[in-house]
Length: 345
Image 1 (tube, rainbow, N blue to C red):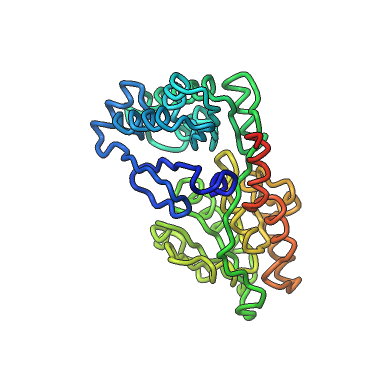
Image 2: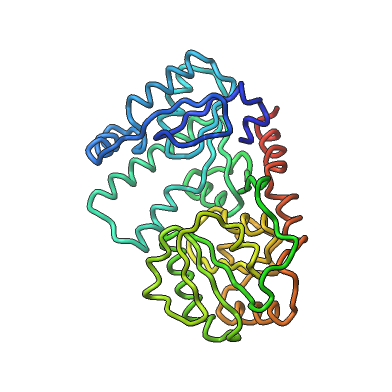
């Protein structure tokens, strides 16, 4: 959407993998990912990005050759072979956006998950494609300084620019009124993914028992209903998947991020700011958000103390200060300014 805002809808072609919905562009080219494990395995063996069919790769190159684009924006570092193929046929500027450093991510993944005997082959494929992306991209942009440190560690030089997380929030219903004043609601939003599972389980076991009985925790996220049989406390409500987040955020007094593993920037932190919510998070959850460091909680004691203070303060659920941080630093308007500077347009 930001690229369309910069160049105009009619000047941006979006190559959408697996027929995903891209409602903000007038020019969408759909290409399919591989559909079975055999094709994925063959991709890995041949050095293709494992999520991309060979036919889709050829289609992308044909589009580039026919349309002679000025810029190619590749939204992940695992598509190195694509950037290499494009540079062979075009003099376009290729910009690759690293959502993290895959070599680091894979090492962390192995620490916390059981891996198959084929995983090292997949890991090698991602490493090679990421290395090619570094070599063939005109600019490599990262989320923050922490990712840049890993970039230096694995590739020996710094990112060309930082492009922080941002959220499109124009259609979000911001609560300027208060909801239920009879309860103090804590909200956790996150899908069924190992850092979220570990973090919220730790929080329920170590923080919730020490809080006032009027303080409630709501857990919202795709697949989180799997935790209902595990997180069984009277003041903990495991919701799981919901259609709309507006009411859950608007009714929350604070949002929490007890996340201890990962990299990059946490998009849910940005989402909470978009809703004007005070956000208590660990160092990991707040990485890349320097304005929120005073809300950092890295221990159960930190969380208990901070939550108790906010509970006793009787503050409005909506914080104009948090919303202002979002608007100034992590909004689409700010993202457009940053991306224009990166692309030199």
